[in-house]
Length: 125
Image 1 (cartoon, helix red, strand yellow):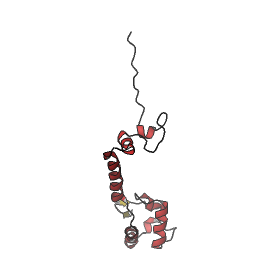
Image 2: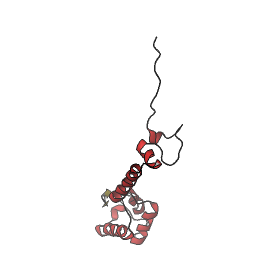
Image 3: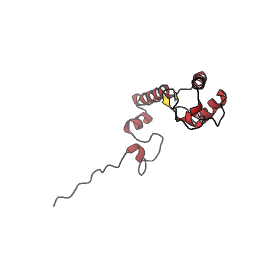
Image 4: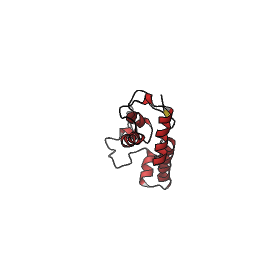
């Protein structure tokens, strides 16, 4: 299993698809990396040599792509900054609610979590 930027990429997938397992590399960037490195698009990731892996990493550094740890740190620091200045988006992140204007009355279960029953008590007999 080749290891690029601290991430194990799957063995028997095409390179363009295997590179997408790296945080910060999507379909467009993966295709651009494969084209610039001069790999055959049908080539599988288990055929990569050490020189090929180094070439992929060099292209990412040369193009200035932020990937894996650097990108994760930047995203977290951006969210922390929004929370510290107490802006609306920061408060939504802090409260665990949808940030981009989605409705919360009926949906938003992914962000809000499982339903919690509030205000229901049994009548005493």
